[in-house]
Image (tube, rainbow, N blue to C red; front, side):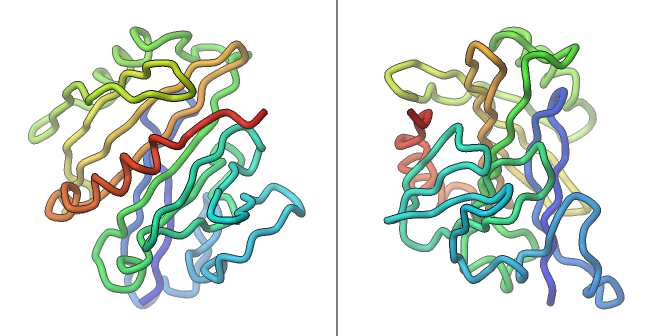
Length: 208
């Protein structure tokens, strides 16, 4: 069955990810926010256009701002979901075999856009306001080290289209905006993939 990629916003232009199965009648559709997983599943990197580049296991965001090192079993999909999403990485074994494919999505929010959070405090308040309701929980995540800087994050647990999800999200603030990196998975497989994800997140760095 065709899997689609879609982005659900957390705050402002930043995004969390949702990779879910679609009904048979929608299998031939391309999502409004980008491209289907199958159309980019060859994993071949390209520097032409707004695409991610993968070289020697290092995936660089489509805008050239950040890179991370992939671990076995995870694959970068070069074609972007939309112009806000600069990283798309999926757990290969989930793409055709899971109701929700575990994934990592990176987004860039330009600081010139009105309403964009300027620091973690503003971002966490906006996230708390965005995720409310029955069955939704938002908690602090373990800090992440990015290029020698400590980055705080959140873990969001909620239900999307009948599927229980957990999402680990970190905002990385720079002088001209912020990069958001999010790991999303169904609640039953979130923990078993977390070690791999944290290993990849530990290699996240701005591109010189």
